[in-house]
Image (cartoon, rainbow, N blue to C red; front, side, top):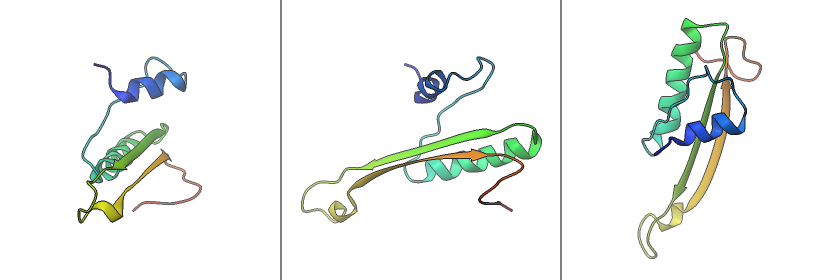
Amino acid sequence: SKSGSLFVKSALKLDPAVRAFEVKEACFGLTAGLMIAQDFVRLHPDQTAIVIGSDIARYGINTAGEVTQGAGSVSLLVSSNPRILELN
């Protein structure tokens, strides 16, 4: 089956040469993706990486995790010349 990243690549009409892949690891997935993107941009300062993270928490009724129910999504552009946040 196709990775979700390929659907995003198609929707954004990115060049076929653009590499796209998925990282899955619950809450840590976005952090891992950001770390990979940071390393990529460090090696290729003329390139930009897109990191997209989303999560849906689904816990049973009357369980300890029920209060953390929710969903969220974020999209990050990682480049060598950031305008909002700089990572060390």
